[in-house]
Image (cartoon, rainbow, N blue to C red):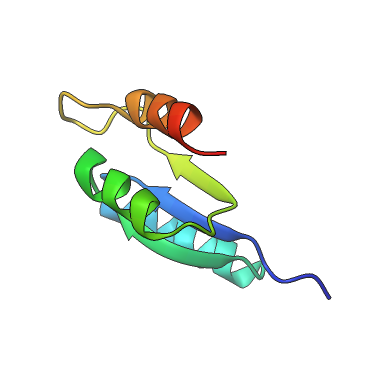
Length: 78
């Protein structure tokens, strides 16, 4: 059996983040980390080089958005 995907969740609303984590874990995915803002998400991406997927909230209720974080991932990671 193939090992589960390693997923990072960046979501500022705790209830939504926990719901995503629970649903994906129940489906057999490995949730590497749940982050609530841009900075912690960027740090997690640097720390975990084995990510298969990042689920990013577009509006993180701060200047830096999930879109910006996605662009950073695209530019700096394979």
